[in-house]
Length: 384
Image (cartoon, rainbow, N blue to C red; front, side):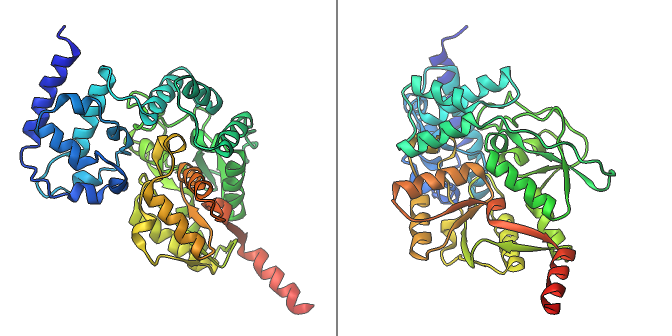
């Protein structure tokens, strides 16, 4: 077998041919949700590939900060598969002794765990990261991660007895199971809207490709409700139809089946790199209208950046999220996001900035009340 270095050089030569049409316009960098935070973003990686600079490609940490959203490929006017180039560089680094960074280390350790057990244990993962020299930024972050890991065993509610039409099958994924409060808030919001949730017995961590494409969820039949954009993407890639829980909730609220309420009169929506940004921001805006709260979107680019992805807790807040936190603090408004990973990384940025900003996972911010209960309450108030 040829040495890894020779294999890598041959692979880079092939990459260079695929990238020949690139004229470094920078649209891939502009489209990347964290392009402004990266020294070696998608444009730089393509440039290194064209130059066949194998050594620098194998040492490039920023390829591990890619969330595989595909925005760079979609934006390329010359048809270069930029996301595919980044994926191949990651594969080369996995095969050799390339960059060692929080993202790559976390992804490898998580993938190793998921091949041996169905869900992640964040305490074990954190300890293994620490052994390799990666510590969470800030003592509060360390304590909160540890506390959550110790509370990770979430009791599943008993399965409701319901007809097939009433029962919605819910795929929580490992992030919700490791966060008892968020898990409870999601179920409470769904149940408050009249939805009855069950979970498939064989549900496990989705094994998002940012960790390892070899780890995948088992196949399911029927549409799975999800509350995590990573799970939504991975299940869809595995051939399982998905529907976000809150999309279903907003649709029911639109039909007048229940009333949405919010924790404050206004909020700052935040959509990270794993979500379909335009669609998600539209649903958040509709939820806000139904709940009588105002989404603050004065600077829309702030609401579609990158939180720091898998390595956020270890390499600190990104510039885009720091600006988002300052934006929210100046307006005395909480930040609301549909992704737990984003929530935790934005909270880290808020602590880093010493900003008095609350950051909520969306079920922690919205509350559902059945329309019948709202009507009965109003009648009681009128009689009184």
